Length: 321
Image (cartoon, rainbow, N blue to C red):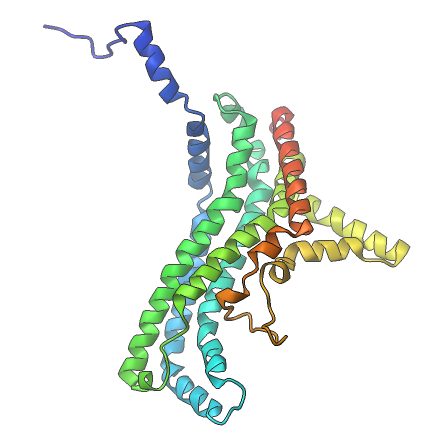
C-alpha cells in the first residue's frame, strides 16, 4: 500500500488550528535575537576571553597571596580605624576588579554592536533578504536593542559569578596550603557582592540606554564612518558651546550620561558621612528608590524611546549601501 509522505490537513479547520502556533508574536522576536547572537559572536566571546585572561592573571598573583595576606594583617594590627573593614576591602579588590572589568567590556561591546547593528546589514546587502521575511522593522530593531540592554548585562553577570567563585576556591586552597587561612577570612562575602553586581548591571543598562539607541539610530542613517558620525557632532556642539558661551552644559550632560549612574544608584557615604570604598559596597548602600525617582533616568529613557522609534522608521526606508 502506498501512502503520501506529505499528508495535508484533514480539513481547513485543522490548518487554522496549526497557524496560530506558527505565527505566535514572540517567535519572530525570539529567532531575530538568536540570529543576532549567531551573526555577532563577539557578543559573548569578548567577555569570555576577558574573563579567561583575568583568571590567568589571578592565578599568577596567587603565588604572592599568602605573603600579601600576612603583611596586610600585620600592618593593620596597630590600626585604630576599623582594621577588619580595611582588610575586607583589600581582599575584595580582585573580585571587584573582575566585575568592573567585565562590566566595562560589556559596555564597549554594546556600543560597537549598536554602531554596526543596522549599518552592517546595509553594508553586506543582507537587508534585502531580511526584509523579504515576514518580520517587521519594529521586531528587527527591537531584537537588536535587546542585545545591549538585556543580553549583555545578563552575560556579564553569568560570566562574572562563576569567575569569582573559581577565584574564591583557588585563593582558599592556596591560603589553606600555606597556613595563612587561620589568620584571615578567605575573601569577601561573595553573595553580597553578587547582589550588588546584579543591581549594578541593571542600573548601567538603564542609564546607558539612550547611548545605545543613539548609536543604533546613527547606524541606520550613516553611509560610512558610523563611529565618527555618532561621536563628533555632540563633541563639536559641546566645543562650540564652550567657545561661544563659556559654558559646558552639554559636556557635563554627556559626562553624566557616561558615569553619572553611580551617585544616583549607590549611597557612597556611610551614616557618619565617610566615603565608602567602591571595591566593596554593602547592601545597605544600595539606593534603588533614589535611582528610579531620578529625573535624569527618565529623561534618558524618553530619549532612548525617541531614538528607537526613529531607528525603526529609518530602517523602513533605508536601502543597501
